[in-house]
Length: 340
Image 1: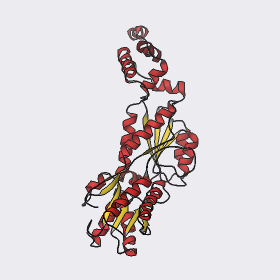
Image 2: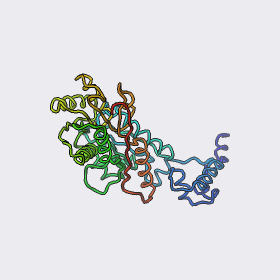
Image 3: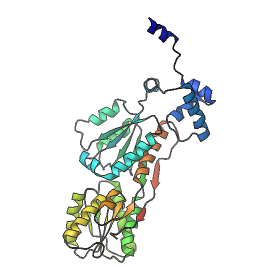
Image 4: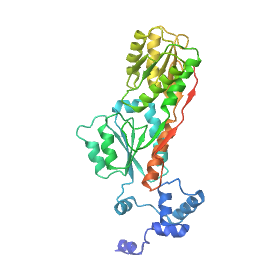
């Protein structure tokens, strides 16, 4: 009985409207602050947070979801093999950037790693309304998953999408990056320069190859020493062996990722080629792999963590109803180390 009396006299939980009155702002402004929107002035954020603390306001996710038909979660879709996802530091940097942005909001992240999904479980999951939007990274041309996801909910790509359309995406200038890396080899006096590309069903690989060709074409050098791999060290080992068998006088290699560049270095060591004396090597990413290898890699840096942050920021702002740019292209730059 006493418990029942306590329940009758317990004050009602503060509402969003009460927080708005206390902070002298609109209900919509409080909502934006709660959801971590960067489009609120710092002084207003301070006032709203002070009101939230004073009133002991706690956002009710379940109530908000029922009222607004939103879930408070977003998905990160990675159409890759699980071992590949957890083995490449590029993905760790992207996820770190995404979570750094989500920490400023009330959204949760759901990770969906699915290279093959014959039962379409992922699409059924997205269709059920458990997430409000999705981020897609490491997509390949012809991926059905990304196409179907884009039909179901707001989508932001990490990297230029392979399919045509008016998509939201965050990318680096991969053509410029490929050109910068190759030009560094040219400037170092290399004249027979090859490349190990990523999968050519991925726009990033195609663009980096284009940058390689542009730099060599501008220098009047041949751009025919090309082998493709799969963004793994093992794939790069096989590609580099093919490249050296076909072009034995190679004196420079631009490799489309640092992980693959470590594979290329192992083949050069196996063949008795000194680095950078006989063959100079340039990678791409500036990931931890660049400094963990026996010979520290000269590499083209892409701001992977910041890309993840920008992807999440763009999606959250879009979900909040803000007008946001369709694309964000970030610059690359060369980091010089011992391999070139």
